[in-house]
Picture 1: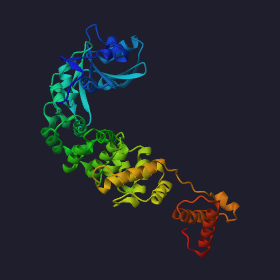
Picture 2: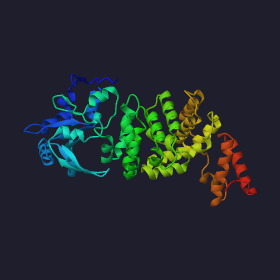
Picture 3: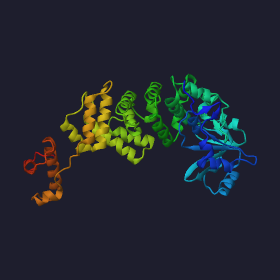
Picture 4: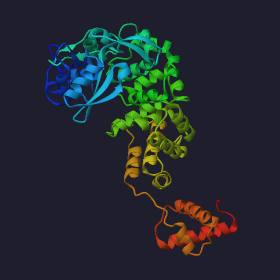
Length: 428
């Protein structure tokens, strides 16, 4: 059972969010004169759990025009973010508060909905996805719960409202939301009815925009029970269609354990790499499949490139090999690749050797090539392509020698590189 520590007798214990700050000021502006506005959705759920709420969404009986009029009269800025669907964003002290006129779905196609506006909070709740997301909070602190969300929240259940299949057909993204919320809130496995409905509607995921899938997946894999839920997703055939290729849920679960052992916060991009990347081509596929941002793709691709030489290892590389990994991949890619290799090795429980190797990569100075093209020209090496060939030959010798820094040793290695090129032995 989950303790709803933020409630007492169906009312919020701490009324501060409703009496002070941007939310209180917005509710004061929109309520009264025959109109009612409540806080809805995830913020109510989190406050009921005694957790802080950061994103405020409001539902109101007032029309969009009336919301805009009242907000501007109170001195607030208004962004017309979704007027066609009855939604505007009121900005109070820099805080965005999305406000939507009560509505019902008239027609849905699995991605978008045509809506009709109304004044019925119960009807608005019944059109939402899960019981735990259909709560609303009045300005007096009363939590309104028309579909049994508080009981489900206390019991650690994530259930669709009404018929699970119908809820999913209204928006196929609810399949991924079912897995995400279950990974965060479900105490004893996935709801059987919800899982069965998700499996039946699995093909509907192909109709969703890749950006929406990416957003849900990254939230899912950082949730509390992500390893267990993603394993079930793999067994039920969801992962390969989402990722467009092979998935490694076991490696993800082991990476999660490694993060926990080292006291790290969940890392969504590294977890995505653990789930779906073995070689750089996998990173390219995920960039297209999930519309990854450039920085996200670059990190995953760099980790995959550094991982190539680490597949199949049962123990961490030697310090010399770790230093080479730092040099060729950089610190972030080296540490990412080592974590993936440790997870891939299947090591059970904390591994002191891998932990020491990670600390080495975190603390050791990154080797820097001691010569540039200008240095070689100053030493008499002919210009043009010869410069790059000599640098590559020197770099190979320098790595094999363990990254020495003594001038005499560096000069000797450079002479060897020049001699190798003269003999036609060095890489070009």
